[in-house]
Length: 111
Image (cartoon, rainbow, N blue to C red; front, side, top):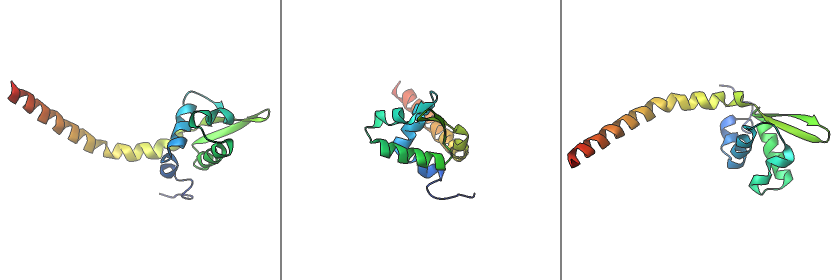
């Protein structure tokens, strides 16, 4: 798997809670940059840095509208994360099945 840089690596990018929060905000639709930092109590320059990292990873795109930049989620870039997590789903299913069997046995033993 080819990676442009550590900054553009989608796993590295979504490791930051603020950037995940920005992505969550954008799931509702496009927003101007000034609105994306409000819930996080961070400065506008900090928001701009987070948005630059998200752009480098192709998780967001933007367009100009007057003097504003309007950002949009580009969820296709998250496919790599989805594929990686899906690989481990089989292990979660097995663990949950075993937990269910254990709880059923405990419940039967208490009756």
